[in-house]
Length: 581
Image (tube, rainbow, N blue to C red):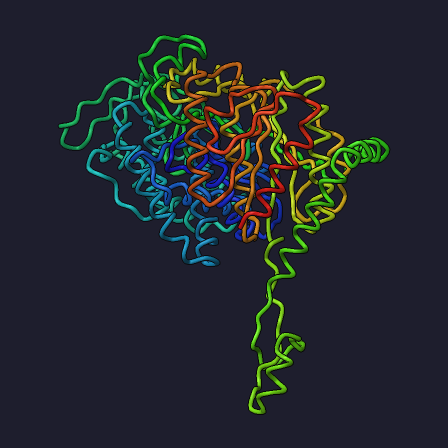
């Protein structure tokens, strides 16, 4: 993951998700990144995967968000999805995108900047790909240009394309006036019919001179229509069959779309690397510092707050209280004593300060014999417990981790501290594996990624502000443990919580691991995350469960060598932190 991305998607995706909820007016809309974007799904907006090392500006990504929000609000995605893949579907999407963006800009004029950035970026991508584009893809792009009232660039000015646009000027005018998705589809179909008629010679237009082998219906990729001055060499299209498909709108696949609605991944040229497996793809990135997933759209976050078995929770809480009740009482006494010492003396109003009574009797002009209690901020602390749910935690480890979380969360809730309990692991995802195989077959350069076929399985067992703790009883084990990404997710949730102090306790029983990633990248990734979290003012503690691996990553760490000591040891550590100003 790139440092400029700040926790690979979690922070930036969280920000974009908030923007999406405001723009759509729908609570619960999430934003994720995937090479298969852009598209709109129920409750989710999928943005193309990206790099921020000078390649794609954040403004461009926000432009994608604005475009997809406009589709979600003002387009009939079902009608677009029903179209068969092809040039008519691409044209319909282009026409409808201009219509819905105009509506969005009327509602939110500030989006004009970001849409403009997206337009510029789309034009640059098309310029880079132009020599290899099929004639019909060039036509779609020039229609898109016409929709946005943009003149063709010099390299885009071919006789056949400009003649086709000129002959269809009346239809382009109707397309600009579209007021619904149905009208956009009808305009696209009319444009396709007009160009086919021109190609077949059914319309008298001496300007149209496209060769039959490169018209709108051919499946070859000759693309020999040269620019007006003929200075730019035109190469055969070699990537139309190998490029991974891009998504038109809500799920239907386009055949090789270009323009503003195109996936960033599709715009990249195929690499020349060998078609090795995941291990080969990661072998060249051993010097990377952050672990980048191929896609985040398959990551699963489930909120289990209050959904645990009540009887199991009561039994778990009873065992937890037996271990930590004396520690909780000791902490309560210490906190109460600390809070009672915070008084403002020499006040003109408040309660009588007994220490000032003698001065009041001896000094007739004395007017400040009162005291007021300071606001006690000692308990304005948010605490997150993050638990490694990897397969190695199975058995006694996860049982004690569950009991430890129950003890801490139960005590913190009784002591008026806000807390959250989270768990994480990664599991193999069939859809993500299919995406990886498509990207690999398409020749995409996957060397910068370090999680290819495993999705994150993230669970919220008790969220901030909730009083029902029964979800903690549902803590279970999964498979692998990409610690860095999970830590970034937990830290982002904690940073969003309003509190004077924020404490994050990470429970782990070893080194970060995934079934398809480079271990060295995973370790450097974790170190980078820990450093970044420290800079955000979050107090981070690594709890090693029968392992000293935490000493390699967390400046503040505790190694628990006896499982039975886990609840009491962790409670003592947390108590010390809560009492430390």
